[in-house]
Image (tube, rainbow, N blue to C red):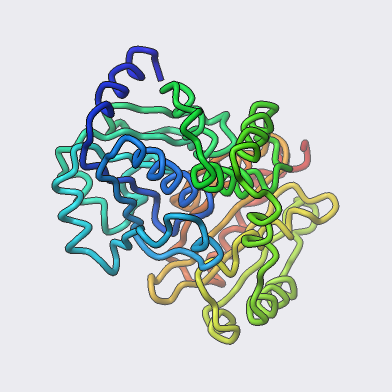
Length: 339
């Protein structure tokens, strides 16, 4: 984002506006942390700001300050549409294509509001007037911190903002172990702790508070873990029947794909989750090194994301999706075995 664009945004935000802030559908820690963190910042300039999530999100993200003010488009459609229609500015965070908002897409497309995109995924669409896109960033929460920094306002970061932004950086970096974690990331998180983010408490809320059924589902997933011999690949599958058996709730499979990637000599891992309601198989992909799951997902499973973390979908059955996945792998034998 250029200095000229930052100056224009500063003038835009100098007087109170009606502002809507939107994460992607099925928001994760980075999406929720960045949107609510930005919400708290905008309140300091007396903006009429609202976070509207396309759909609900896991309970382990609902403790963060400001969560009670988030609207869920699926449940509060009329109110959400009215806010979008009357917005002066719409921030879209942690996604780069409007279809990632599900049923909100049409309302956002028709809105005459000035749109500002802040995101770290590859190949952003050209729907926003102001685009802050950087695929090298650890998370959108780090980008929101740097956006506030570019506006000259880090002094305004309080414990609420710090907590939200720390949450997203922590979750999108895999608790700071992924390669996207830079020295700048650590400097920012240090500053967020100084400004009031309780790092131990945040980690406990996200990772160390589990229901009995969630752990039983994890056991089922690990029991379904398979390794593709000779191709350094592992995958997990969960059927709708298995999800129902363990009373699946949104977010219960968060991070499960990483167990496959943790196996010795594995560089590519996938999880296939059946969703009978949507009629699709949801796919999460992870990799090590230079093997791009972003390219793999875009090519074969209508998805995308980052080099080492991406998502996709399939309209085949669960078994046929897995068969397709296994059939494709030999085409990537050299790339997988070179890692």
